[in-house]
Length: 415
Ligand code: SAM
Image 1 (cartoon, rainbow, N blue to C red):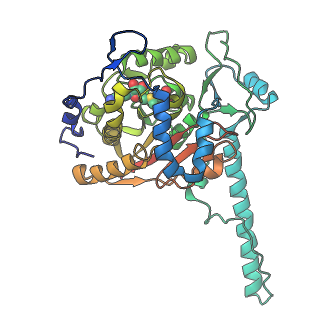
Image 2: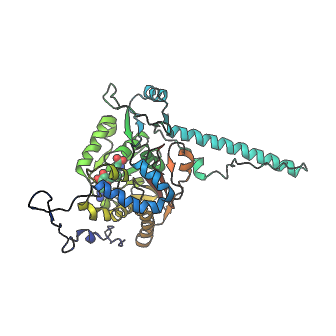
């Protein structure tokens, strides 16, 4: 990967190179007509994507790949992100009657149980120690319960988010019915890949935080950020004007005007953000454009594996690195960045993180700490299937019983 220039952008000149000489379309004789067709027989982009994934992901995921592959090709599962700006109690009851559960509050309960278990274990061990010290015989009971000290430090800070996202249990492929408007015309829930909520939870927004959503459209995660109800200031940006319009539509369907008007919506090239407003935000979400693996194997339209988009696809890791660097530069010292993709590709995931940590240090003298998010696996394993061998960050793998994702997310702290 090329080095970052002093503008903060990575070797952009590479992007402008024209096609190699002699690479024009081959001419093939049309089988039925006596004329020349100007294009080679077209292999569908979805087939190209699958072939590419077969080659790469079978090496990465090994025995897991056939099952992940089948899941990518099957109907995906959705989650219903409840809209806290509408009266949600009866919606929640209705969804619970259908056997759906809010996986965020389930995780909060799990944290409490783990903490209570740890407190009990601690006093049990203390008692056994004091018995031993006072001359009594010590009964050594092997316990799998952890003490407070052994619990992952992150588990001490419970998931306190106001975000509520309902999913059906593993193996249950019931679909949510479309959301309906309340008396004020706002929709009761937003249907999205439930794994998309995880990067927002990882961001762990605190009251009055200044938050930047750098690649925000069409707005699922922006909406989830607003559901926390505590952002001090929220800036939502996306370079695409047409997709930014969709972001406006989502917000106007779900968020009351007075809240909507507090969100700053822009259409800048996110790569420039670090220079425009460096060191400003407590939390930055960098949900980058990627190979959108599920879309790429299922949908011909707007497919990044289309032959004419080869160069764009190959340049994705570079664009992702530039956007992540801009996110890091936009963060205050001590602030946090969550990087996410909906791809399984290590080139777009861990490698981008490693490169960004390196560039931040060598070119900007910024120290970055990659945060441990393994407690997400403990908390959300009932709902999602996680890849256990991710070197940095966490990766949700599509699974036939829990067909969410792929979703990669990694949290960085600017020291
Ligand atoms: N966060 C969104 C959500 O949850 O609905 C999805 C974001 S999508 C994965 C990636 C977005 O990045 C696209 O909307 C695309 O227009 C935007 N994008 C691509 N290049 C960009 C750039 N240079 N600056 C800002 N946004 C960019």
